[in-house]
Image 1: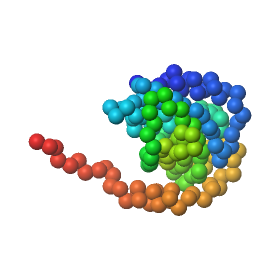
Image 2 (image 1 turned 60 degrees about the vertical axis):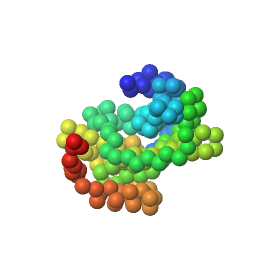
Image 3 (image 1 turned 180 degrees about the vertical axis):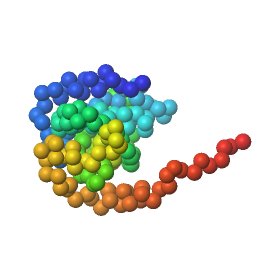
Image 4 (image 1 turned 30 degrees about the vertical axis):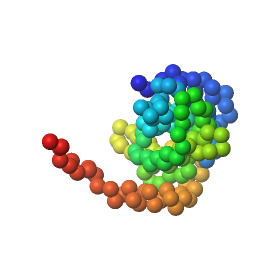
Length: 181
């Protein structure tokens, strides 16, 4: 089940936090709970992505994205991601999460997030996010302009552009494959 109570807690904790610009870093702290664990008694890879939601959604609120999305009748969705897992997170470990928007192109916003235990990075994710409307994808520059931010994206790092280029080579829809007997 989605952790709606934890999400509500994040909104409560940051309700009076100062606003951020799109390029600034939102820092939040989270605890790995027993229900976040996999059979190997560490943070489940899928739950890791859910915890990243708990950093990304309040980041959007602090930046002012939610206000603009609501006013325009737009939504926001994850349109792709790549994750690197490097260190185990176990029950009751506390992690610090860092969330920031590193830029955009003609279709997507690119949001970088990382989890840290002490001074060691446990995982890192790049989220490709789309602003959506009833008519399809909205150019992210429209959201950025509505936030009062310079519409020119920061230069995306080489590793991000390499991922975008590699992902563009991926077939869609994928092959169905064959069912095992």
